[in-house]
Image (cartoon, rainbow, N blue to C red; front, side, top):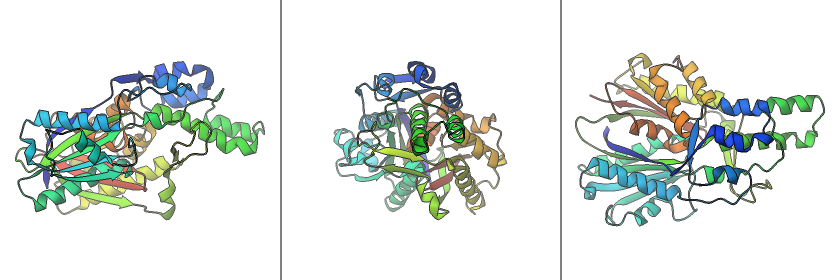
Length: 377
C-alpha cells in the first residue's frame, strides 16, 4: 500500500455558470432541452477559453491556458503544499484525454515546464486516452515503482481541457431527445436527418456537461496518511461495451471542421452503473480490504459522469443520493462539471478530514471501471 502525502488542484481563470451559457443560446434551445440541461447537475464549469459562450455561438476560441498549463500548476502547488524535498520524487505519471498535441505526451510537457523543480533523471509515464477510470490505474503504476524503489516518491497528475473539444452550436434551433423522437413518429422530420439531429442535441449536452481542470497527487510511504488499499478493475465486460464511449480523430461533422468528435451511447448510465457496482463489490470481497460492506465506508467518491449516472450508481449501491457519503461526488459535479480523469482526484484533494475508509470509483471509455479503498488508520 502507498500513502497520499499531498493533493492539489488547478482550474483555469475563466468560470461560466450554466445559466449564463443557456442564456447566450436561449433563442436556439427548446424548453425541453433546457430542462435536460438543468437536470445534468452542473451549476458551473471552468474553461481554458475566456470566451466560451461566444465560442459556442461560432466565434473563434480565445484560450488563456491549456491542459499542460493546468497540469504544471497542479504539480507545483502539490509539491509546495507538501513542503518536502522534490529530489525525492523519482516518478511522474501524467494522464489526460484532452492533450494539447499528439506528441510529446503530457508527462514530457510537464517536465519541460518544471525545470528547477523536478529532477531531470526521474522516470516519466504518460497515460493518454485512458478515459475516466485512469486515476487508480496511475496510482497502481506508482505503487509498482515505489515497491521497487523504497524511500522514493511519485507524483500522479490528471489534467483535462474539455471545452475546446466541444462543437460550436451553429444550427438555428436544437430540440430535446424526446421531441426529436416525437417529430419522427409524426413524420415531421426527414428520417435521413433523425440521427444527425440526435447527434446535434448530444453536442449541446456535452457543451454543458464537461469542464476543465487538473489534479496532482504526491504518493509515497508515510505513517499517518491515508493509504490506497486493494483496487479492482473491469474492462469490456461485454464485447459491444467497447463502443459505449468513442472518439474519432477527424470528424466529418461540418461544425467540427475535422476536429475530434466524441460519441456517447444512450445505455452509458445503465452500463456505467453495472461497471461501478461490479468493481466496488470486488474490492469489498478482497481479503486485504479493511471493510466488507459499504455501511462501513465513510464516503464514496464516484466519478462525475452526470447526475443521471451518479443517481444510477447510487441506486445500485443502495446509497441515497442526498446522503453524506456521496455529497462530495455531487458537489464536484455541481462546481466543476464532468472532469473525466481528474474528477475523483478533485474529491480527494478537497477531502479535508479522514476519519475512516473511503471508496473511490471511476468508469469510462473502454468500457472500463476501477474501484479502490482508501483507508486512514
